Image (cartoon, rainbow, N blue to C red; front, side, top):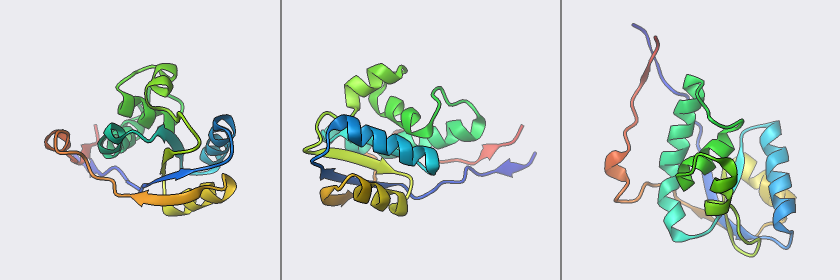
Length: 147
């Protein structure tokens, strides 16, 4: 039985603010996500940070296995962070709530910087992606076996 590994990128997370409205920020994030990689915007509440890395890993595994429940990796991450299996409920639970302070997860530093430029993000501050202490024991990264 051959083993294949899930190819993971290096996601980037940052907080910031913008004078644009939420709808505009979401539009730019969606447009950039369609071109390449992904950009997803979250409310910047502290309890969301430790959920990002496990959600990213889970979404990448789901994409590799062809079992995404949503149409995009970004929305899959949002659903996994929120614990809601419906995109609308996930947006209400963890989606961006204010353009004056939000959290952004992007598929790469280059994609993050492109979004920052398009959205004219003020005071960006990069955030390390590490699972919280209560989540870390449940996170395991293992090879996926081909069937």
